[in-house]
Length: 429
Image 1 (cartoon, one colour):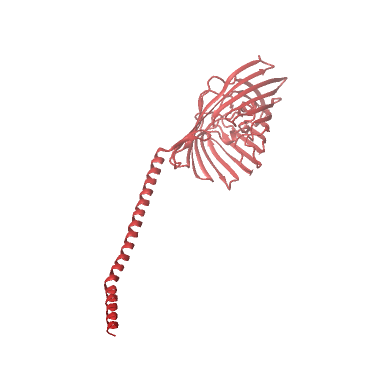
Image 2: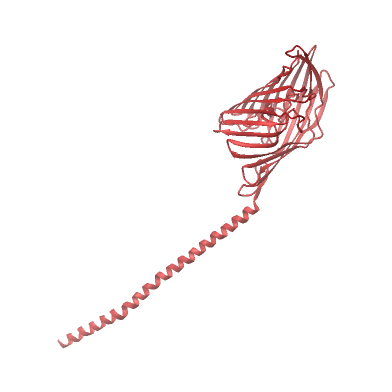
């Protein structure tokens, strides 16, 4: 019994020592671990914040430097897109042979045009600009003048003349700025081609976006005008333009106090075709659009030929075209009319162009027919053309060849001329 009591006492003392001295030591060890985890988390958070700061500094430095490259032209721009400058250029070399019935035949090499284009935006993406210069001074179309007569509503004889002339000397063509408030409302100021002057869709089917010969005759010659243009697109289908320009068919300061004012309306039934004819992109979906436009002008000073407007004359212009493109096929018919409401005479023109890619995106067969009717007896002009276009790298590098049969009907004298052309377009745009 004695030894049993001693064993119980020793056991009780050992348990008490473990309870009062061993327990606090274990508890102290457990308290150190949480403090170590918090330090690690704080260190990792600091590293993350430093990485974020470094990334932001790299972004800022890169945005300040901007970027450059090529995208249908060479460009320089900031990464946020607020500033951009794009540079484009193209030139057109040609050979032409003319078999003339009433004049000596001609055999010609020439430089049709060489143009530089600068475009982009400043301050933000909504403020855009464009300037285009015509650099050619080597070649210009010879001029000729024809006088015709007609009778007005009072029975008086009216004499007018028109001049065939295309000015290809150095000059500024485009020089405008445009601000986009919304897709539905934008405003353009400067020098541009009014929509009623697009005439024959600036054909790129035959001879490098040249106008048909009948479209370089006054008053149909397309002119770059200076003024203001309100434009927009509604519901991605309906395009409109309302403009006021100097008018008078002259690319310079207005000669009187009357502006040419007008509007153009386009409805895009299928897709939204761009200005031009050829379906070089081989559209997988049909593109169909119809445009109608008109302009009014009242002169308060006499304007000599080729405009030939007397004081107080009011002139009206109208134009309508349809554009259809689908899988390499394109067709564009157009009607243009010019009417002097004071002297009651009118000139009008009809044109039709069609093309089809025999080899998609490369080889295209093209045809064109045009008719121009001047007021007065037997004063008609016809043009029938056919040709082949080969696109090496799309529009920027292409070779074109065509033949045209030209008919001019004058009182007592019909002229039949022939023309062969070969052209090469080079550029980056």
